[in-house]
Image 1 (tube, one colour):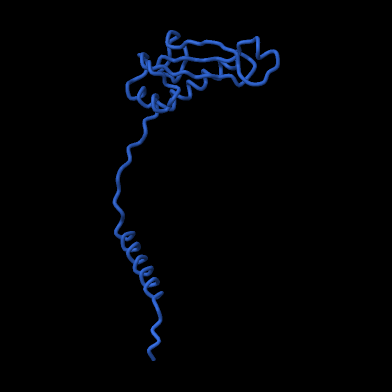
Image 2: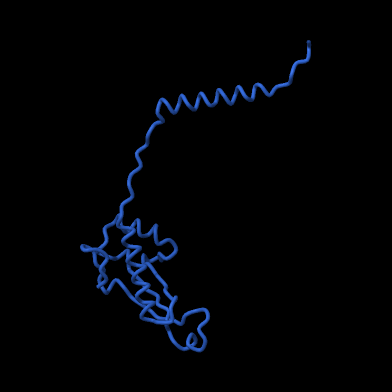
Length: 140
């Protein structure tokens, strides 16, 4: 059971972990110990998440979202398998919490009368400056 908020918790059947060898430096340890964790969360089938949250989660997950509706998170920062498991679970919790927050609807506003007048006055000043750049008439 992975607790997201007071009301939402993910069941164990929704999460699966697999362990592989980490990439990068680490000496002989990296060649024999499976410390990298790949956490898989069946988001599409989860009964604990409402539809709009799943939609936002899919957008936030990006390429971590698989075609069958699961989120795959890979953690291989540390040499400890237990710490990598914690990191992967923390990332998943953060991602789901971020998806729980509904974005505010933008309310379209019109420009104020004062801002319109200021814009037009600035245009007039600019036009005057440009018109004075013309050729000087020497017919005197």
